Structure formats: C-alpha cells, structure tokens
Length: 292
Image 1 (cartoon, rainbow, N blue to C red):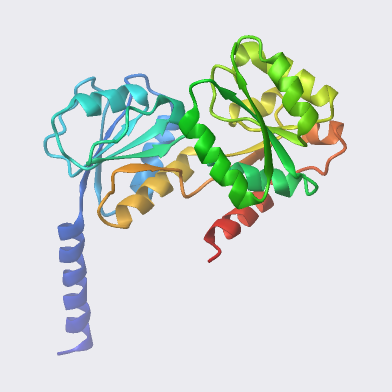
Image 2 (image 1 turned 120 degrees about the vertical axis):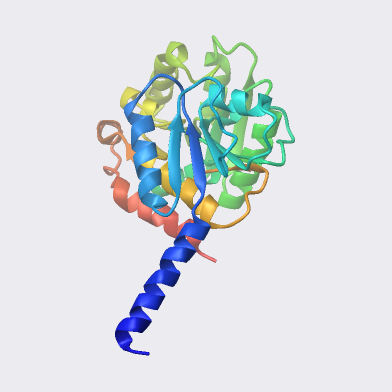
C-alpha cells in the first residue's frame, strides 16, 4: 500500500471515529438572551468541535433526541428536575444556596457557580502571607456549607473565627466580633448577608479595622472587595467540556476546574498591600490544585 493510500485510510478512519463519537448536546438557557450565555455557547462549541451543540430557550425544550443536556441557571434546572427524561445532564450557573434537595438524581451533575472554598482560602493566603485566622459569617440555615468550609480551612492550615447571623438585615454585631478575632473576612455564598443592602456597611466596618474582604464573588470586586476567584464563561465551558471528556457523568456537585482571579487594585493600594497580579495568581493557584 502506498503512502498516499495509507494516509487516505487513516483519514477515513479518523472521520468515521469522529462521527461515531459525536454527541448531540442540548443547551437549555433562559429565554432572555445575554452576552454571558452567548459566550458560553460559543466557547463550548470551540471546546467540543466534534459534537453537535444545539440551543433552546423554550420553557419546555424538546430534549428527546439529546445525548447530553446542559441547563443554565436555576429556572432551567427546575425544568430539568420536573422532566421524566433520564438523559445525562449538567446544570451550571447554580449557587450552592440554590441547590435542590439531596441526593441529586442519578443523571444530574451540578457545576457550582460560587467560588470553591479551598481556592478562596489559598487566594487569601497568597495576598496576605501573614494570614492565620479567617473570619466567616454564616446564615442560620447553612450547616452543610459550614462543614465544607471547615474542611477547606483545615486543608489550608487556617483557623476559623465565625458567627451565625440571626438577623441578616443587621449583621454588624456578629461582624464586629468576627473582625476582632480574625485577620481577614472571607465572604461566602450567603446572599441574605452579602447583598446590596448590607455590602456598604460590611466593607466600611471591615476596612475601618484594616481588614480586607475576600470574595464572595466577582460582582463584589468593583464595590470594594479585595479579590476573588471566579469562572468566566470560557472557564465554565472548558470545565463542562472536561467533564464530558472524562467519560460517564456522575451524580453530585463540583466546582469549575478552570477559573480566573479578579482583584481591586485601588483597594489594595489604599490598604498598603501589593497590587495583585491576577494572571500570576490564577496560574499559581492552578499549579497548587494540580500538584500531586
């Protein structure tokens, strides 16, 4: 057989293999269009060029022929939970506080939108080398989240000073107690505490005592939080692609494997801290997670 014939055979085999392994992926998104959704869809198609990626914004999408269903946001996750289909599914852009009752159905895996706790604590240690004690405020119904953060704190070698906020609309008393006993405040996925109504008071109280706020998410950076990890639409798409490439989906939850860092240089400067290098921080944190 000539070299040309061999090359043609290899090409044909590759094309047949690609067609056999191609999946029909259905993305179900909210009816309202957004740049974030469009960026995710485009990035997923780039990450999975061999697959057929379709999109539906209907409230009851036709998903009978899909090999994999990807839901964006809590509304589409609720639709998926009410559907009788057993199609393997990945739910994204859902925060831990909005998770459905456990255990999750066997067909469902949720990639959480809020930052991974251990990742946040490692970021805090990079930014504040003398950090020894982390302060956390919990809502009174967050037992599972408390356990997760306790494990992350133990893994990072940090001590915890925490308080449960009984009245989320007035968290000042608990905040002051935590700030007095800790080196920095770590914002968690507690929307009854970390919201637009409380944020100004939390930031002013923290910075008046020379304590920074890490997290709880990217939207808080412009408002005055020092830094956070988060996943862009491309990060999320690459994380979903990685899950699909690893084989059979397992029921449960995880955090995006790919992420970025976003910091507020003005806050760092005002507190006399080095200006964070977000790209370098992201690379160093990734190396820590990939280390054996």
